[in-house]
Image 1 (cartoon, rainbow, N blue to C red):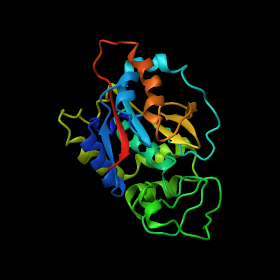
Image 2 (cartoon, rainbow, N blue to C red):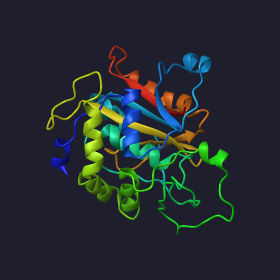
Image 3 (cartoon, rainbow, N blue to C red):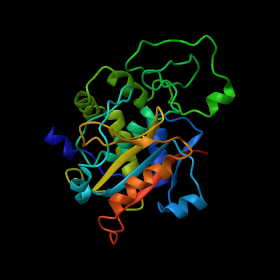
Image 4 (cartoon, rainbow, N blue to C red):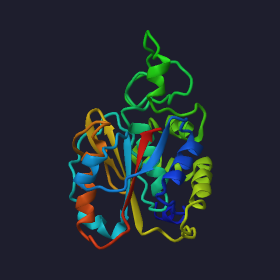
Length: 262
């Protein structure tokens, strides 16, 4: 898959750009990305952030330090895509967040209610239908994708594949690539040319089944970092992020955006 490193423009970790990319992939309204202006404990204590996912970006030269971090556990029910392209990192982090967050309708291995705008994918169990549909109020608090959107189609096709096969599927998905490229050209910084791999690396943190999961397409499997919830995800993930930042505190190329209800 070495040639896969050459086909994606880098996307800026800008909340407006990331929200637009999520919308183009199929995320319905009700959720948006917001800047996390500080990852220090006192900052988050003063301004707590409730989020279903966190995207963290850092210089890839610190990746060697990260290889031993976290606990590789059985990621039952999680969708994981193995895809070693840093240029595709923003879209891959989005896929990992939108597919796996606890607030996602139809998340893998769980029942999917028959209502509009659901993410109709199941990984480990047959599709089942509850006897009572979710109310409109409870549905509005959940994250969902437009049926037939590019990400909905990708996830439906990916459910029975291995992580590496999902990476190959992503490589051939022209609709997702087109959305990625459009948003890559809309940030404040100049995107790298196709063929030049970014030196910045995206990872996603999600709350799934009560645990904080780190999903990184350059690794072999998701990593677990202990218990978490939507209310504490940013604070819990900040410990991992601060450990990365501590390796080079004078480097300013670190940023984080959180997926929150708007």
